[in-house]
Image 1 (cartoon, helix red, strand yellow):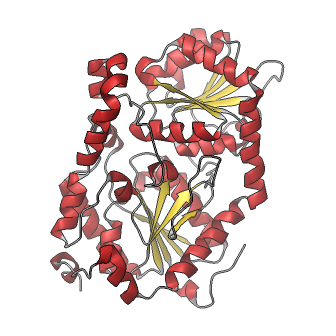
Image 2 (tube, rainbow, N blue to C red):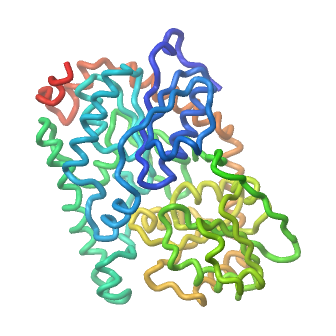
Image 3 (tube, rainbow, N blue to C red):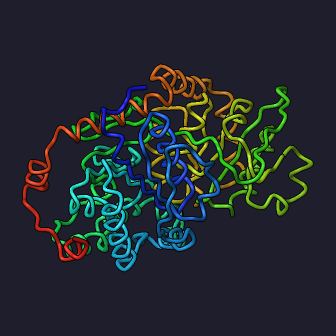
Length: 437
């Protein structure tokens, strides 16, 4: 791994991860671990409820930050609203400013921390945004239809016909609370939601290029898949597997649609696949499934289990997809949220991934998809190509190499030139920022 510049270790790297879903604290903590092991001092902020998941690590100071509750986040997304209210964004901005003033970091990293670019500019701290490439302004999409209040109301058929046009309109309006707080602090609004999600002095995309990746802009970098291998919540189990029968790993995570769980299991079992599942309440799973080939656990060691299965079924989130593909396993995503739909669409272009919408899910479609993944060798070949590329890049060492490259790039730009080039205008410092001076 490359080493940080001499003297730079006195200033910490501040990493702030929202806790609406588990994926963001987990991948952000993996980044914190890698940087700390490379010699950086790291301050890692996420909601306190996640702290017990992460083992203590030398060089990492854990702090608590405020975040929207998971239930509120998912409900707002389901209603096609921005996941944060204007009041919550104001509170978040104040908290960001306090933390930047307290720690004076060398750089700050934000994962779904939408007001961080404002605060970092006010305090002259380089801002690195952790994001998924399917939200990049460079990523073209066909606007797949999510499973939401409105699409359920109109039905799958009508939603597919008019959904893409309506979705464009929704995405052009939904981030108004974020543009409002930017306006309040003297910043120009974002022209579209993709710019909002990926804004920063540098964008650090989770993962690496595949066949459908466009050429990155000058301040954009791929940073590796940030595969988190588990923590300290309960005992992580590794079930025994009989290699004579195809096996699938099923995990819908913290943002999956668990109303689909039984349908997915039915389809997998009918296709002749044994299922190893992670479930928050294994005791509530129908006993009939257990006698037919389902093994359910509250906690699983995904890294080890993936080496024993033939493919994975998940919610379409990028963390689980990267985990499966970097283990050389094809992936079936049953998506509900728009983020998951975009993610599945982008990965499917590169191969190794199939997607099904929870909006019209049937056990027959699950069974057909499972048979397709098992019988069509191109899916496994594509997944193994991801695995090979990850190994060729150097695994986790690639993340550290890229991050230090980002730091060096940002430090080569002085603050005056950065501020002069921001949206082509010199911005005033807001009253809110001056209140912390």
